[in-house]
Every structure is written in structure tokens, then in C-alpha cells.
Image 1: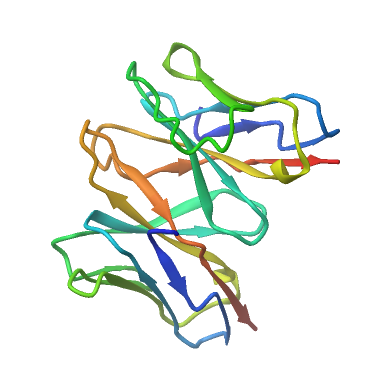
Image 2 (image 1 turned 30 degrees about the horizontal axis):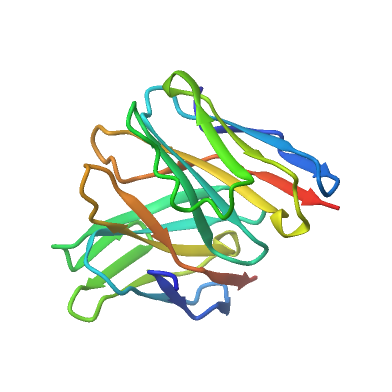
Length: 114
Length: 115
């Protein structure tokens, strides 16, 4: 099964509302990242939070990490129609040999209506 | 180049044919990844290259899939005797071993349709 699992699978909101997406994972991580994917395009990195951090902000994005619960949340405040996309969490697993493997969840499809 | 480049952007092929997908990573990025994404799904890890080390092929779904990375730069993913279940978007990503080495930069993908 996927290391990272997001919920909800789909979220539909109005412009101006906040959108919250959650991610749970199973094993110890180096860090957790959130990526965005517009329809038919590649993924774009949004934010990285390290395992020793609890909260991080970037513009209208706020990410929290609770390693005791093995969960993270992504909050998008004051959403815009342009935020419509799929959002994926990716856990960076500790591997010997000095490289990192990201394991992606199935994503949350966010639709923001004008 | 400025970003990760993949070609072709779309590929339609007949069942049983072989296909080659190309990825040109960001210049200087030593790590390169291939993923597969089925419609509406997350990313499935296929293979990872890092410098001159042996690649991590643990995600390749069958021996019909193979990948090479020549000269530590361009990579090709080859699917032999394609099947309909191979239809998906194939994404390539690269990352640097400097700075934030964990962040991956993605190409726009190759949409493969096997008829």
C-alpha cells in the first residue's frame, strides 16, 4: 500500500474559503513534501517540512507535521480558482546508501469554484 | 536546459510494439527518477539513477520494462511488447545532490496510449 495516503480524495470549495488536505504515513521519515499537479502536467514542489519541524508557512500555504501521529496537513488559505489542482504528499524515506526515495500518495483533487 | 524535458509528449502505439520514452534532466542534476501515473492515481515509482551507482530498479513492474541513463544525463525508458495496461502517463524527475537534494523537479510527462 502507499506510504502516504491523503484525504479527502476530492474537495470542492468556493473561492475565498480555506482548503485543508491531510496525509498519513506509516514509517519513519526524513521529511515530508507537498506537490501540486495541474491537469495533464508534471508535479511542482510546494513545500518541504523536516521531521524535526512542526509547522511551516509559504505564502498562503501552511503545513503541519505530527510525527507522533504520522500525519501532515496542508492548508491553503483564501483559495482561488487557480488553486484548482491535485495535491500530493510525498514522504522521504531513510535509505542507506545516501539517497532518498519519495513515496507519493494518491492525492487530493481540489476544485475551487469562482 | 531550464527544466526537465520529456519526449514525446504523447505516444500512441499498438499492442505488442516497443516504445522508447526520453527524459532530459536539469543540467547538473545527478539523480533521475521515472514514475508511472495511471488516470486519477498517484505516482508509482519505477526506477532511480544516481551518478555512477547501480540503479534502483525495484519498481519496474515486469521484465518488459528497462531504462538506461547514458553519460549521467539523458535517460530512456523502454517498454517492450506493450500491453494495454501499460497505458499511463510516464513522468521523469531529477534532483540535485547539493542543497535541498530531496526536492524533485518533474517533466510534463509522456502520455502513452496502447491500443
